[in-house]
Image 1 (cartoon, rainbow, N blue to C red):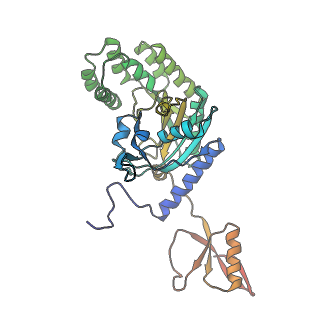
Image 2 (cartoon, rainbow, N blue to C red; image 1 turned 135 degrees about the vertical axis):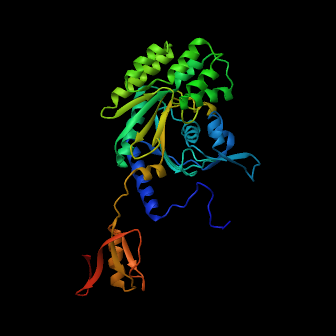
Image 3 (tube, rainbow, N blue to C red; image 1 turned 90 degrees about the vertical axis):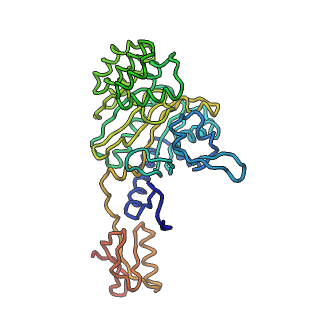
Length: 382
C-alpha cells in the first residue's frame, strides 16, 4: 500500500472546501456568541472513564481507545464533546448561575455514523447548563435554526421526540442493556414484527404502548393520538405537553413528531429534536435535553444543547463566493512593499505573482491589480 493512502473514511480537506468549512465555523461561532455563548476548547484526548461513564454503549463503540504511555491508564479520543463540556461546567467553571457554552473541534469515530460520512467530523455545538425550564429548550432550538439560517441552509424542518416516553413505557420491565438496545433498534427501524417478538413477555401496557409508538409520527395531531394510545402516565403527559409547547413557539418552521425516534446517544433525558433540510440526506442537527449528563462529575445540573458536523453542513449548502483579491507584482522596492503592506493593513488580500508564475491558479478571485502609474502604485480593476 502506498504511504500516501489514507485510512477508509478519512480524507484531506483541500483549499476550496477548507475555505468554506472555516467560513462556516466562524459564522456558527459568531451566531452562538450573539446569544451569549462562551467558547470552550476541550482536549481531543482524555481518560476513558471521563469520556464514557454514563454515556451509553453506542458512544463507547464509536471511541478510539489507547494506553497512555505516561500513566498506563486507558485513554480515549473523543467521539462526542458533550460529556467534556459537562465536565468543564461541573468542575472548572462551577457556577451556580446559568452557563452558556459553545465549541467547535474535531471528533473521531471508529466507524462512520451514516453512509458516506467521514470518521473525523468537525463538531460544532452549543449547550445551556443550570435551567430546567422549557425556556432553555426553546432557546437551543431557536439558536440551532439561526445557525442553519446563517449558513444559508434552505427549507428546514424540525422533527421532535422525547426520551421520557420510551423510558416511562419501559419502567418496571426487567430488561438488561442488550435487551434494551434491541428494543430501541426495533423502534428506530419501525420494525413492528421484531418489536412484537421482543415485547411478548412484557406487561400489556408496556407492550401495547411500544407497538403504538411505531405508528405515532407526523404533524401535531400525533400528540393527541399519543395521549389516547399510550394511556398516558404523568411523565408521558408532561412530555407530550412539552413537545406541543415547543412546537407552538417555533413559528414559521415546519415541525413534525416521531415519538419512536431514539437515534443519537443514550444521555438524552427529555425533549429531543433533529433538523432536516432538503439538501441533506440525513439530519443536519441533533439535540435535546440531557439533565443527567453531569451526574458522573458530581454535579447533576439541568442541561440542553445541540451539535452538528460542519463538514456535513458544507456539503448541504451552496459554495460561497470567493473573496475578491488584488494581484500584485513581486518586488523588493520599498515603495511597492509599502503599498502592498498598506493594502493588507486595510484588510485586502494581496497575492504577489512570483516570477515565471503569472498564469497560476489559486483560491482567490483577483478582480483588481496593483500597477505603477506616474511613479505611484495604484489599484485598478482588471
